[in-house]
Amino acid sequence: MSQSEVYIAPVSLQAIVSSALGVFCICAMLFPWLALLAVPGVVLGYLALKSIRRYELSGRKLAKVGICLSLIFGILAPVWYEIQFRSETLPGYQRFNFAAIMQDRQHSEEKLAALVGEHVCLKGYALPRREIQLNEFQMGYERPDASFGWKPDPEKTLMVQLPDGKSWKWHYEPIAVSGTLVRNPNAESNSDAPGFKLVQSEVAKAFVFP
Image 1 (cartoon, rainbow, N blue to C red):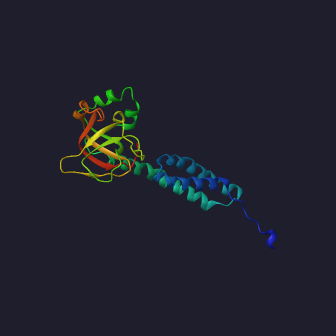
Image 2: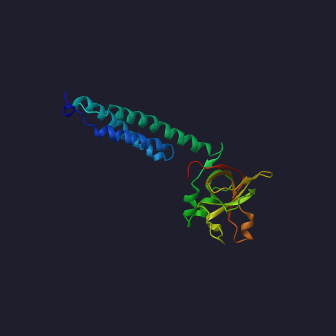
Image 3: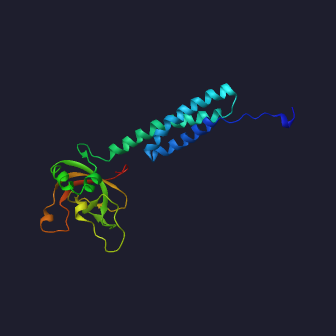
């Protein structure tokens, strides 16, 4: 058979798309919503295998790769996300969406007041930017501004106090704080002080935000 007569089977488009979706599913370890791509990844992979057998197409390996990656990371990513999500909160503490509470300016004080005395876990950013060991600091739901002279808005933040003898080194990443919410006694005499405070707090890295 001459070189001009060599037949090269076309690659199944479904196999190509399936393998691409499988690769995207790997990224679901960082962006969990990408795990949703596992469903079309698997479906297109099986359809590709059927088309390859029926129409003598190529791309069988691509289809199998797409199916395998979609199945593995489509299951693994949500499980990993759930493990990380649960690891942020101490046992006996209930998680609340701090950003959603504080962004509702009209009702934020009312919502926080309803949680006074409760063991809660809230996530945000430590304020202001001071790379030192801290026993007490403010926490907001927005990343701190790096501009000179910036001060946090007390209506958008609360205080965090660690147990006596404990400290935490400031960093720019989001944190998850588990503690008991109380009213801040300093707020009555200091207008710059937040109205609420988390006491006996434990600070952990927030893997999932918010």
